[in-house]
Every structure is written in C-alpha cells, then in structure tokens.
Amino acid sequence: MNLSDFDYHLPPELIAQQPAPQRDASRLLVLDRAAGALEHLSFSDIGRCIRPGDVLVANDTRVIPARVYAHKPTGGRVELLLLQFMQAPEPGLQQWQCLARSHRGLRPGQELACEGGMIAVVRGRAQEKTWLVDLYYEGAFDEALERCGRPPLPPYIARDPEQPAREPDRERYQTVYARAAGAVAAPTAGLHFTPELMVAIERQGAAFAFVTLHVGYGTFEPLRDDSVDQHRMHSESYCLSPEAAGRITRARRQGGRIIAVGTTSARVLETCADESGILHPAEGATDLFVYPGYRFKAVDALITNFHLPRSSLLLLVSAFAGRQAVLAAYGEAVRQRYRFFSYGDAMLIL
Image 1 (spheres, rainbow, N blue to C red):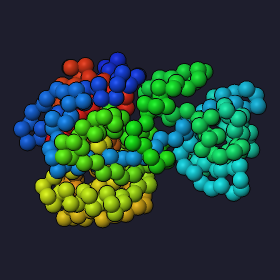
Image 2: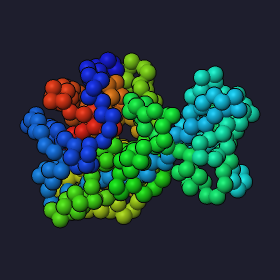
Image 3: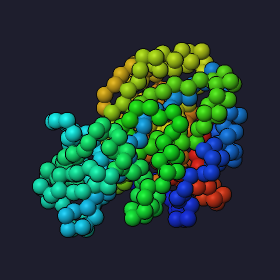
Image 4: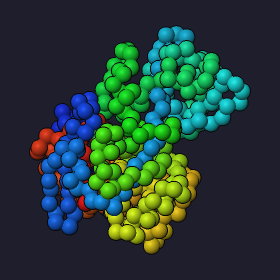
C-alpha cells in the first residue's frame, strides 16, 4: 500500500482560513457506507442521523496557547511551539520540549524575550527537530502562558505574527466542552458542536461520553515513507475513565451505536477495546496507527473533518469507510466547494 494512493487534488482556496460564522453552520457531508450514498446537510441537522440510544464519544482535551513568539538580544524573531512539559525544577521555572523556527537558528544558552513577559533560555537539542527550553515566569504558569502564548493554529491557516492574536481564534480553535489542558492541536470534529445542539441531541435520547487524548504536533506531520506500513505515530497521552467506558458499553449492549467525534476519539476507543470490542478503562500513551486493513472493534460511526492528502488522518478515515468511497466523497466535496481542514466542514460516516 503506497502513500500516493491517498492523494487528491484540492484547490488552495478551499482550505478554510476562518471558522464558519456559527459553529454548527458548517456543512455536513453524510456518507452511508452500506448504501454507498452521499447526502448534503448542515451540521445543525446532524440530529436527523442520530438515533435514541446512540452515544457520541468526544475528546475533551483543551488546547493550550502553545505558540510563543520571542526575540533574541539581536532583535531576531523566534517562534516556539511548546510540545511537551518536561519538568519544573523550581518555582517560576518550567522546562519544555519545543519546536523552534528562527532565521539564523538557535544555540544553547541563548536568552529569548517572549511576548507577554516570559523569558526563555535555550538549553540544547532534545531530539533531531526539537529543543529543550527553560521558561521563566511570574505567578501561575497557566496565566503566564495565556498572556504570552497564541493558539497553535496549523501552518495552513495564515496569520500575521506581527499582529496581536485574534480573539476569535482563542475561542473557536477550542471545543465548547474542552476541559483537560494539554493539546497542541484541536480535535477539530468537535469544533462544530454548540451547547444548544448537544442538548437537542440528548433530548432525542442519545448521550455524550467524553474521553481525553492530548493531540500532539504529529497531527500536522506528513507521512514521509511512501510505504504506509513503515510509518510510526508519535505517542499521545489519553484517558478512558471507568464512567465513560461503562456508559459506552451499556449503550452498545442495548443496541445503540458508538459514534466517534473525530479521529482522536476513535483512536482512544480502539486503543482501549479488546478483540471482542469490550472497552477497558485505561490511561497512558498510544501510538496506534490505523490504516486500511485495520478492523475496527469499538466504533460504529465517525464524525470527522476533511483531512490533508497523504495524512495519517485520511488513512484512518479510509480504513473506516474504504479508500475509494472516501476519495469519491472528497471529490464530491471539492466539486460542491466544501471547506477543508481544521476550520472547514465535516463528514458523518455511517
């Protein structure tokens, strides 16, 4: 299986640069796997496709303002993306593993003045592409990062680093049910839900259950090996609580469908399911890579955005619905001028 099998043409103007005016005003392309049929809806109409007894499993991770801009003593601009907390050796100091972008590179010992008042000191390489950086701050770290950091929008969403962070991004690159801070990318399928839509779905007799997977930068990383089975996923921390596992298991025993809200929720469910599909509460790190040939054990339907060509996310969706059906649906979405990627429209695969 070659990565080139998961390519498709996308006109650049269909890459959404802004969210829809209202979260649930985005479009929804429904793919019925059994019938091979497509239907065009608004996301606000998703309740038409949900039955009493279904459980929607959503990822409640909260995106941290992980993009930090700083300046060298010479005035050169540096962009840091905080990836992983490493340690807090003393009050007012945290060490993080970061990606860094700078015109002339970084060197150990370099001191950087961050927007909002933090000081960053470069300690050295963590891995081939990442750096260890000490962050010095006053007060509570979360509050300091809110002052200094910006939403870690993916690189295909254009923002001017010279301009202040846009308040709409702080709100809209976050689900309404986000709770557990730790992600550096949003679980984008959940961005379409409003509190009102969730209440309406529950009034139909369906329910929500929440899992946590802290989405890492690997979400943005392209697959580099043309042979799909050579790819290795970055591990991401997750949690499936006993309460959520119990709710999902009871619903399935009573004939309800398990609808994963996004690929991250699907990966948590598949990580925690045994071969018979029974979920076991767990927390840890998962590097589960799902691609065609994988047999799903715990997911009956999937809500997902439109994903980048040749990405691990597109491979997971293709494993769930079939490569040809997914690429045909993407072709239809392009023809109908759907909006793609993080701030774009959604699919429901039944």
